[in-house]
Amino acid sequence: MRWLLRSKIHNAYVTEANLAYIGSITIDQDLLDQVGLWAGERVLVVSNTSGSRLETYVISGPRGSGAIAMNGAAAHLIARGEQIIIMGFELSAAPIEPSVILVDEANRFVRFLGETANTVL
Image 1 (cartoon, one colour):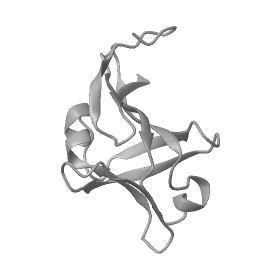
Image 2: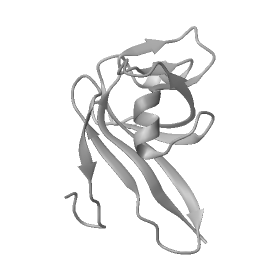
Image 3: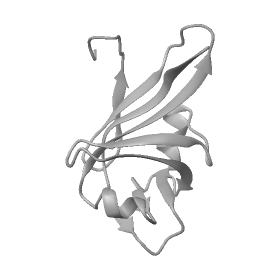
Image 4: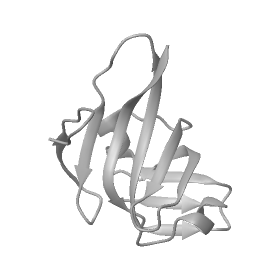
């Protein structure tokens, strides 16, 4: 069994960083549906801006809002306006085809991306 990439939202922008919230990352439900992430699921979040990396869990945000909010302690590491990648993984005995999407500056779906070990298509 291996941990494999299953879901990825590529180049999203953080719309809010809320220290007072009880932890997690809020993501527009439309984006969650696009890549198959669930509320409560553990994700890895990587900032292209600062290089910060953290694990947290998903909270569903309003559909069509473009919301990507870092909540609680995570807001100390990744701030509003940073460009991030959000990844979900699956434990599997066989290779899986990940669902990878590219979003624009407003966190709107642009297109699906194909990924291999060495390239993004």
